[in-house]
Image (cartoon, rainbow, N blue to C red; front, side, top):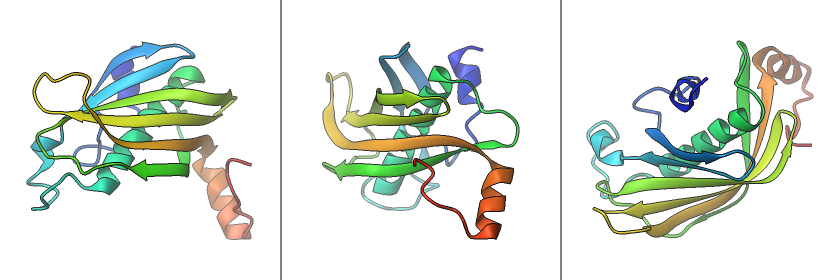
Length: 161
């Protein structure tokens, strides 16, 4: 499966997909992906800056792609559960910036991961871009059926434990 096919496995679709392309993937080391928010400006409202929640969602989507590359793609009926361990929004992002997500593993386990991510934004060809946000994110792959059973029984806990 190539990287673009893997991106198609993300459950989010436009306008809620905030990863356009995988730029680089080094197994066990890092993933770099990009997103151009400008085309969504009309869909997401008249805010002066790209919404922080969308910025962090794009980072989360990039961590899901990395987790699938390091373990295996989502199977039918599975979904990624994410938890923020630590986040920092450094600055607002203008609509015309190109966003670059950089993901690195802290700890990889079977179907679970703790990842470090950063978002850089740049206008034009300036390199490498300024830090806009960073986070440590926990990802676990679960079946939607298992999650529904836990919710019904009242036993839903921290998926990263």
